[in-house]
Image 1: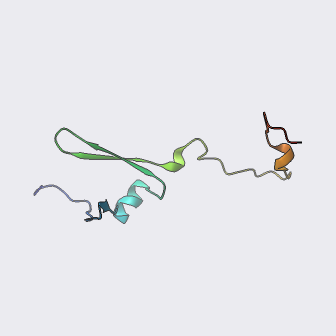
Image 2 (image 1 turned 90 degrees about the vertical axis):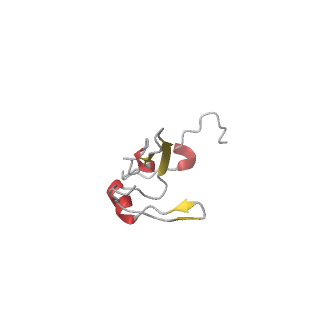
Image 3 (image 1 turned 180 degrees about the vertical axis):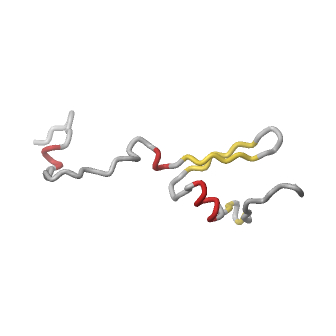
Length: 83
């Protein structure tokens, strides 16, 4: 390990390690994201960030119309007797 460049480091405590702030910012890691760990045959550790906000509704900002909705009458209640 002597000649490797070190971007940042953290210490393991209670089997947990913090992700340094600079790396969190650079990789846009936020609460709720998942880290997927993979150990290569040569012992190299790879970590892939799976961002929670990259799912199906990541670009959905909610209903921005002017008409009010009534959840009890407007909701899709397929298979549910509402009366």
